[in-house]
Image (cartoon, rainbow, N blue to C red; front, side):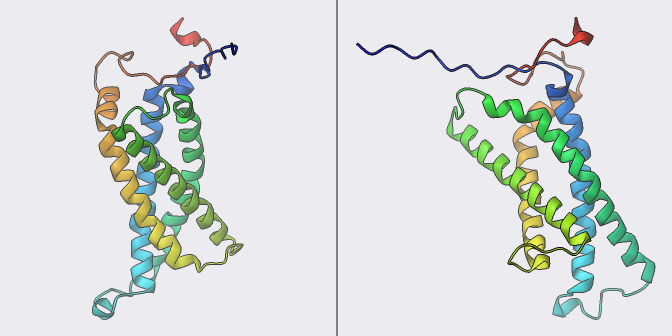
Length: 192
């Protein structure tokens, strides 16, 4: 008779850093930064590469307008990097939730989150390398950055739609313990 292996238990994480309310708060800031980056990126892209029907319609003045949108794009992109890393740190215990896939809907949610995280990491770090004009990849930066931006925004909208009930619960006056991340990282002194 074979010895039975003990059940694998996911690690537990407690504390405000892995709290769902913290994740929601960071998500709001990160979402705002991505929205600003996306909007200013669209302005920049269509001013640099106008479609044929808009060549004579898009304004080329004031000159400072383009500088302003590019400055906002770069500044919010750089600010989004620590926000993204903090958001990933806050929600990473969910990677250890058991079982890893509970239903078809849950599998699709995890797949959409994978696309969201991959797109955000790609956009922010290739954009950062673009600011120093270092291109260690074999593709043309502008068209790929533009295409992945659309993918990222689509994944973000899907993520917000799926998580909306949890987001609403954490920003309403409902009891704070109703929805929690499934893992914990130690005692929280503030709640003791």
